[in-house]
Length: 96
Image (cartoon, rainbow, N blue to C red; front, side, top):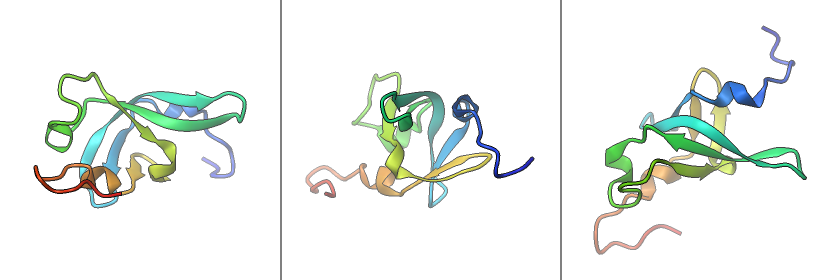
């Protein structure tokens, strides 16, 4: 496969998402698009890592991660570790 050939955005659906530290985040279920700018603005994730999102997305079907967090797309999608830092101990301030 030629890397210069653009992939269909639908090829992202179903891929697993991991933090850059190797922590499973979830699986891409859908994409958020900006039709005017013709760009992907977010990844809608389902099959979430319950430990990672406990207390933040309890009972939710999924979450949307900003596409700007994506660092690499291949067989899996790698995102910044900011998603890991969202989980804080009670009483700690969430990172800015």
